[in-house]
Image (cartoon, rainbow, N blue to C red; front, side, top):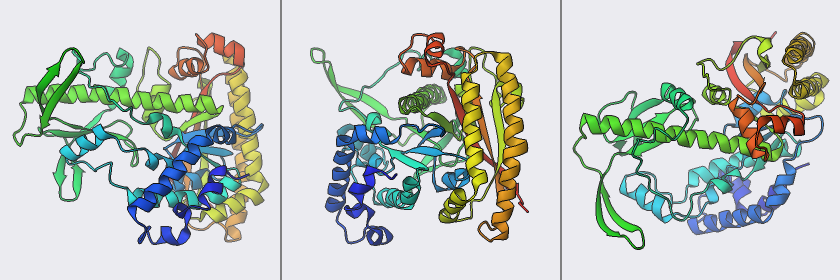
Length: 455
């Protein structure tokens, strides 16, 4: 199999093993920027071919994870997932300089986006290099999804009269506000540092997912002054500065509330884009965030729970043995050699497809129970036997852990993910989508949940 991105990168300094090991020392910024520009041009010119590469194969479960995957997650899923589509980490670094964001970053002491992110290039190159064999085996696919996320030439400035309270429907806004983790940020010689709590100040960080590598939103409370205003052109010149004095409590609280609302809107937009890409790829969405899962599972009557435990809810919940400390090479060799892993993936895709095709709630409940019995009592028993054989051979070493793979199928158009998939597929209602496609949208949640000693 493989991918055309390597046909380009194999002749580029970006994937030179020696240069990567030396962190591109001796390579000028200009040379790196030229190589990145060439890679960007190649991906854009071959966009349709890259889209064809991520098309799902019959009998295989294709999952889009976006930027929510790393080598650790790929190791954990090596035995159990057919194909994982990831956002291309190198293409993300090729975005052109942006005048407005550069000026803003310089003014408020944030990392300068105009400066070449050498560390980022090194890490992205290492990821692509380490995943080359995974791409060749069909386990991993990369796609430049960030192309459509890049900022426009002119960025609008919003002045909401309601503090962004109307950016989301009330039930979703309440869900986000409950999950918001707001903390103070201080400047230091090492950069901006997130504090353990929130204090009166002018810099904050907002996070919803509570994940180590999740996305947080940063804000600066600057003072603004309109220097000039041209009513005919609609253009204004505004001066901004960061005072050394603290804001009043009233101003601070209003700013924090508005920032939480704004962040909620952006987080939701990112989730929507991920679902849109999944629909475009013909794949299923997989997240590691319990909060994202709760949003996707939300209806007008939102509850705080995200992962039901009962199979009658239409969910599959599987606890799978994983091995983080084993090399990817050994894991992929075991994936290919042990028939038990292939049978598990085959049965997972089969049962998952049947559940999505079943419209009757009672029949879906029965099929879910049957699927859980088949996967847990038969397929995972074979997987455990295969793992014990691999441990005796010395292929798998060390203490294993457990990951939970949960799959949810939308049972009606009331769920948010059902509405999303129907809209992105061009249908006015979920029922139109269901009648035409004859299947229900769904998503997966993947989480490592603890250690387990495998005999």
